[in-house]
Image (cartoon, rainbow, N blue to C red; front, side):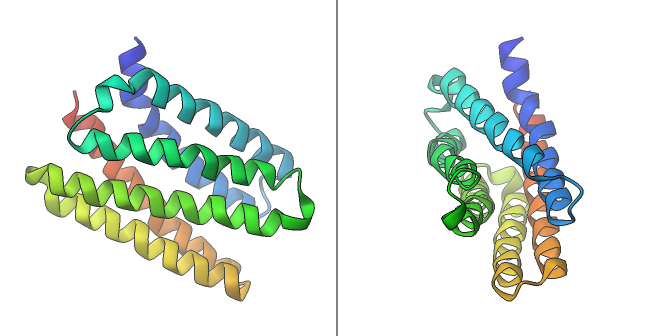
Length: 170
């Protein structure tokens, strides 16, 4: 059962996280909801890292283990933004852009390691990286629509990548 949760959980959690992020940008999910989302993300990422540590010691899994290890403090930065209001924008931005860039690297590395799906993973990495650039531009310009386009690119890229990885790992 634990292995099934580890395999299928990210397929649900990744698109849910980006949907929640978009909902927050649109004002449909308030700060309490995002605070809870960050706390839950820290718990899930830690759970996946700890329970899957030995299974992620080689191949493409090594990159994802690193993504999770670095992702925990990145997520904690976002969580800290709720408690350190004088740095909230910076901390939220670090968390947001961090979770756009980290998986882009993991997807690119996966493309190197998984030859049959190389193009798919490079494409999904590219979508995530492009989304990070677009979203950062939206953040810097204060343009909500541009930020949402970046989030959409990232959400699609990461969801397709994780869904394919889950399918291949069965």
